[in-house]
Length: 316
Image (tube, rainbow, N blue to C red):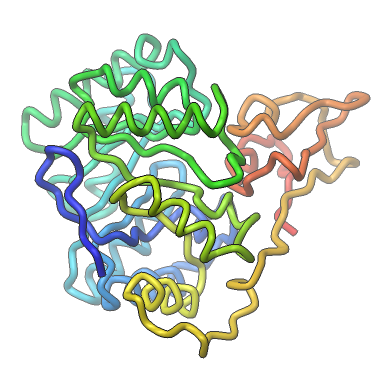
């Protein structure tokens, strides 16, 4: 499998990154035992890069997989914390739950971030930079869906890594268009930022165009690609593909196209609008006092699920 160095950090990772979001409670909510088996399968298959987050609640299966395999991959995590102490606590939580003394990459988690992000999260960024100076974190980054924020990140000299959302359809991009995001990524590369990509399959919406989606991501440059995986067969398929091996023997229907989508149970909806605020893709709106999801904009990230006070949002 190809390996790439992330900017000037010296961190070298496999092109394929294990994305831990879908196996957590925001989406599939896999039990710890099966989640552990999937991560272990990825590590033993040669993937050395795992992306997770405080909000994903997937630290436990990652830790158990490391214990079972004896393999410690490059780990990136992130937090929505805005203040200094909150971010310190988020990093401490990650270290404790993962059983680590230091972590490779820690991001400001800012899916809905805008031009004010680095001012609003100044305390959180300062905490990450101080922890980097102490050796607790090797690299500091930002994870976002906004082309505007990615462009701004190129000018923040303290940032080492940028983790942007992009796919050939432009689904999920906010704060600009697909061409804007492409330009922003180039700007980050020219600023020597380490870059790896998320949502190249648009949260599963374009799984049926897997080859085309990955070809597009690769056309952008030599960047690692984070893919969410929720079964051992998905792990095997992705590893085989990225190892340039024959994948014709795989029959898992989820690799041919995804029927997963999120729906709001109208009779349970409180009309509070919390889901509108948490949706990172502007895919939820209020219609006649109830929340509705626009399936053409939804990238199936599941960020809206914990934002619902009565659990009215369901993956179907």
